[in-house]
Image 1 (tube, rainbow, N blue to C red):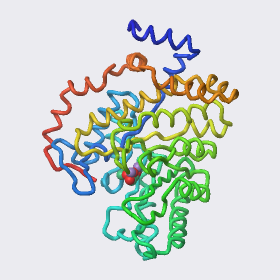
Image 2: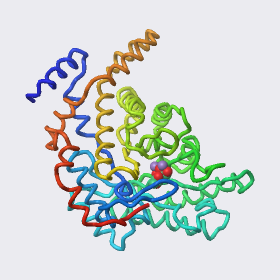
Image 3: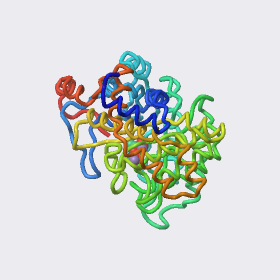
Image 4: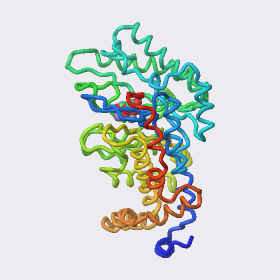
Length: 406
Ligand code: LRH
Ligand code: MN
Ligand code: MN
């Protein structure tokens, strides 16, 4: 690596006791899944905005996602959402993905799109609707088997808007019953990731409102059920990295939906508003990897990192690239934390020293490091620039307007 900036960086990190070869290995090994729905049209509560050139079907979504992987080298799988990505030939979709150099990742059942679910899906007081919802969950297990995916990612819009509207405890039981049947249908390799959100679309109570409820349910279901943390799904001021550390220690952290938020579930580009939070999340994970028990280390090594952003005002592919690059940047910074230094300061109860040992890593410019990593894995050193100059964005405009949307 001839880059002068990298040489300076290398010397600087060596002096701090950071093994850059190990850091680079970790940066190359990181895998971040992108969501099929992030490539389609999206909007706000008020309107879905149509962009020229968005994919018209799941096959084209995979073509766009493959661009992101080709340019970054760290996004080899794509989550699907059913029925948004419904096709009559999942084998063909699987093959199409493989031909593009990517694979099908988490399968997300969708139980919030149909009119019948207005009062809930698996928690609906009408047994026929609960049955329909459960059948969809089982259908998704079958799809996962067909496409070779071992992650089922669940989020329920179920909840109520008014006190007294429904029996909260009964709904809790119905949810557990449906998920138990789904759990039993999974193969031993599969994992069920349970996502929570404190509000929206329900405004009074949500059946799985926080990590504690998801954790409790996952515990009752068994070892193949874990919690999914979507970074946009908490009340203002929630310490997300604390939740991450807690779940890791319980060996129940299944994965992430990364996005950025300013107010609620904003689904903005990852790290655009809260890069320090992302860095601190990675700090907890790396600390668990370094000092946790065997079970905790295993959990940390098997986290499903996924992006869940959907954006209406910017072009889809560069926005996804920006998210992925931001994840890589914050991970790189977290890898520069000297954990021994933090530990020594903690042992001395040196508050400022400990905080400084963490924060200092955040303040380094990791651009030379990431350039070196990209050069070594054979992707463009500046993926965004390469994408913008590639002409791909122009080439897809012929798809026209009115593509797939959520
Ligand atoms: C819900 C959510 C969940 C859905 C996705 C489209 O807010 O985060 O993950 O599947 O958005
Ligand atoms: Mn999500
Ligand atoms: Mn969300």
